[in-house]
Length: 420
Image (cartoon, rainbow, N blue to C red):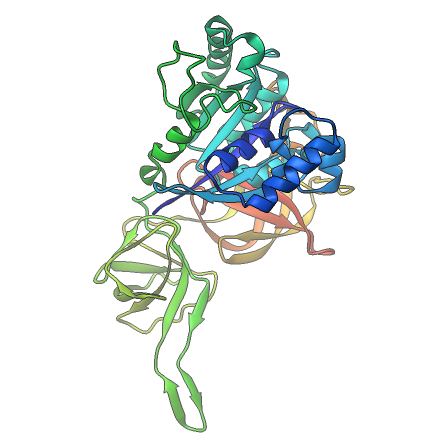
């Protein structure tokens, strides 16, 4: 059974938490005591209905303010598929949280209040999902019950959003009219909107095709851990030598010729092992151990690829960076640690080309720094070669994080545009 990771985003009070609560409730993914606690809290607040948003807004501050602050992960499953939900906040001051939640998502749901229509925040969320190359986008027009389930209103919003999305890199865009509060078109089709001929939201989530979204062309295997033969007192406990990691692209099979980077030496795969035993093929995002026919000096941070299909080997990187540090700014000459796949090195910010206004898409080329939640294009010089692809080609080998050397805290997330 495969897993669909999806992120939700929306403006304040668009009903994200209620929608997730409704999905959990209607797919029977919550326990009775959880439901009783929510019903009790709803009654205490004087709410006439069961406030399902209380299922997801876990932080006390979120409940008290009625907003989502942190990225909350929720898990549920149907007979067809398992799901991991990243409930991301909508406020501009939590852009970094949305980037965190959407960076690993296969699909993003952007909620729009049918009464308010497409807001600046809606456009910002759409831009961020396209920047992060989320393959599938669903625009859920919520609170249709408050506009009398009007088809005309739904079509207005669809046309306006489609016009904006045409300027972005959005691969697959789906529009679904819903009422999270009443459950219309969330898990089952609504009788209140006979004019809508599409599927319910859950049906779409269960059936959206994600297998082809991953890069199955370019073989990329960053080595995470070397399993060495164990010896003690001249006694060999095991003579096993393998290289463990997560496949980041392509398909690997025993007998395949591969190249080791940085050495450039070639060998063949002798076997592919997993916790459950050997397998005949491995592909992203499987975690496996590779054994090779030849002895090569391989370390953590090295890359396995195909001899005729190799990543860029680069120390100069051009990247879009979302700055996540509070109180620290990204400026030219800033020194940081870069973590890319399993490789870590030191990096110097050589230049800041522009800061991007995520609401208007305007490029401010006069900008001299990036502050918290700001996004800009930068040039980085790295102390050792990185084995990278463009982010548009492979999100795993095209993404990296920046770490502050003093605090060891993550201060930025980057997407590689060019490498040389």
